[in-house]
Amino acid sequence: MWLRLIILALIATQSHAAATSKVQNIYARGLITNNDLQTSYDYIIAGGGLAGLVLASRLSEDASTSVLVLEAGLSGDAVADSINPPAGAYYSSIVGTDYDWQHVTVPQTNLSGRTIGWPRGKVLGGSSAMNAMYLVRPSIAEMDAWDAIIQPQVQADNTSAGNWGWDSMYGYMKKSENFTAPIPDLLAYVNISYNASTHGAGGPMQVSYPAMLIDVTSNWTSSLELAGVPELLSPNGGVTLGGFITPSVHRSLPPRSNLNILPEATVVRIVFADNPDASGNIYATAVEFAQNAAAARATISVNKEVILAGGALGSPKILMLSGVGPKDVLGNASVPLKLELPGVGQHLQDHLTAGVVWQTPDETAGNIHDSGSDFSKTPEFLSMVNDAVAFVNSTALFNGPATDFQTQILSALNGSAATLVPSQYPEVVEGYKAIYETLATNFLPDVAQLELLMSFMTSGTITIQSAIQHPFRYEHTISDKAHSCSSLTCYNVVIMRQGIKLVRTIGAAFGAAFGTEITPGATIQADADIDSWLVQQGANTQYHPTASCAMLPKPRAASLTPTFRSNVRVADSSVFPFEFAAHLGSATFGAAEQAAALIKTASYTFAFSHLLALSVTMFYILHSTL
Image 1 (cartoon, helix red, strand yellow):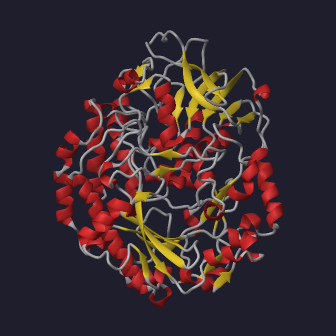
Image 2 (image 1 turned 60 degrees about the vertical axis):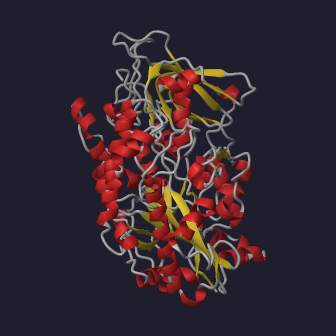
Image 3 (image 1 turned 90 degrees about the vertical axis):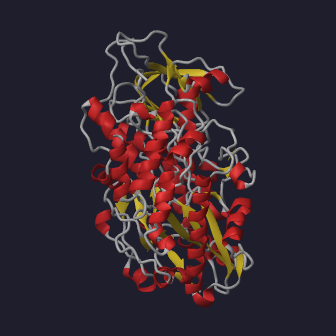
C-alpha cells in the first residue's frame, strides 16, 4: 500500500493545472524568433540544456550585458505536462520523440555487437528535461582528484590552484539550491537521513523530496544494512558510500529583457577571424546556426565570448565542425583545420548499468499509475521518482579490500594504453594513462565503484539496478573502430558481475516483498553465465556521458585547461576528466555556476575588432600552442 505523504514545496499549494501553467510561463519567458534577433550579443551560448541555462541566468544578472541562447530543439512548452512532473520521465517520456536527439551507438563489439540507444534531450533543459531530476553529488575524493590531475597545468601557467577541487566546487554546487526539508509526517513513515547544511538556500533550483513514497521504499536502508551496506547519514556532503533516499530538483529561469532564447537554432560552427591576432592566436567573431539541415544558415556576431554548452556529444561536435580538433579526424571529414587540438572528442566515458527484476505482490507506483485513478494524475503522485539509491566500493563487492584486483588493473595500464586508445596522438595516450592511474590508484578500493538504484515504476515488478561508476576503458565521440575483447574489458564485467550478486543479496533481505526473479532469472547463477548475460543483453548505458572535452594539462591532450586565455569556452558535463560516482546534474550545476563567476570576474573584452585569442576553457581553454 502506498503512503500519501508530502508534496514538493514548489507545488504544495497549487493544483496540477495551476502548477503546469506556471512552469510553462516560466519556460516561455525570453523566447524569441529569428525576427527578434539583435545583430550581436555580448555572450552567445550554444546549447540550452542544464549548463547553458545556468550560465544564461547568471550572466544576464548584469542588466548591461546581452545574452543569447541558441537551442537546437523546441521550447518544450507543447509537452510541458510530460517534462515538468518528475514522474513524467517514466510515464510520459519524451525519449524517442522529436524532443530527443535519438542517438544510437555503433555496434559494440564487447556487447555482442549490440547497438545501444543513447537518448539526449533536444529541447530547452536538454537531457535534464527527460530525466528523473535526482540530486546525487560526487565525493570529496573525486572532486579533489579532478583538481590534482590538472595541477601540472596550473603550475605551468602560474595561476591560482584549487578552483575545481571539493572546497571550491561544493559551494558552487550548493549555490543553485533552495532546499526544503522533509516534514515530520514523511519522516515518520520513511527513513530519510539528510543534513540541511549540505544544501543551499535561496537559489533558483528547488530541492526536496517526493510527495509520496510506496511501502517498499521505507525498507530500503534497513534491507541494505542486512546485506552489509550501511546507511549514509549525511548524503551529498562529500561522502558517497552507503544507502539513502535522495532529493530531486526543479529549476526555473527568470525573465530578463537582456536574455534572448532562440529555439530551433542548431549551432553549425563557430566563425573565426581570417587572420590571427598579434600573438598568433585565432579568435571567434560570430556563431553560425540554422533551423535544420535544409534551412539557410544565419550568423550572429559576438562582442565578448562564445560559450559551448552542448553536452558531452554536442560540444565536441561543434568544435570539430568549426575546425578545432584532431587533425586526422578533421581531414577525413574534409573540415578545414583552424586549430589542431588532439583531445577534442577523446576520453568519452559513460556509466554502464544492469538490473535484477523481481515480481512483487506489493502495490508499486506502476500499479497506481496504470489504475488511471484520479490520484494517479495528481501532483503528489507525479512527484514520486526512484529516490532509493546506494553507492558501494570494491571492498563491499569483493568482501574485502580486493588488493589483487587493484594490482591486476594497474598491471594492465601500459598494455591497454598501447592497444585501446583510438588515437594516433601521444598526448591522448598520456591523457588516457593519467585518467586510468587516477581511477586505479585514487579510487580503488575506497571510492564508490557501483551505484544501486531501486525502481518501482512498473506494475507488479521491482528492479534494483547496478551501475559501474568508474569504467576502465574509454571510447571517443567520432570512432566506429571495433576493438577485440581485452582483459581490461573483462575487469569491467567482473565489477558488474559482483554488482549483480550484491543486488541479489539485497533483494533477499526484502523478504516477501520481492517474489520470483524474472531477470536475469534463476538459471543465471554461475559467473560465466552472469558474464554472458551482461554481454548479450543485460548491460546498457545509464545515460551519463562525460569527458569528451576533458580539462587536462596540455601534454595530456587537453581540450580545455584551467587557465582562461580567450573568448571560446566549454562549460558543461563534457569537461570532467573522468566519471564521478554520482548523477552528473549536481556537478554540472556547480561547474556552470563557477564558470559564470569566472566569466563575470575576467570576461574577455574586444579592445578593437581584431583583438581576441582562442584557447577553449571550460571555464577553460583551447591552447593554440598545442
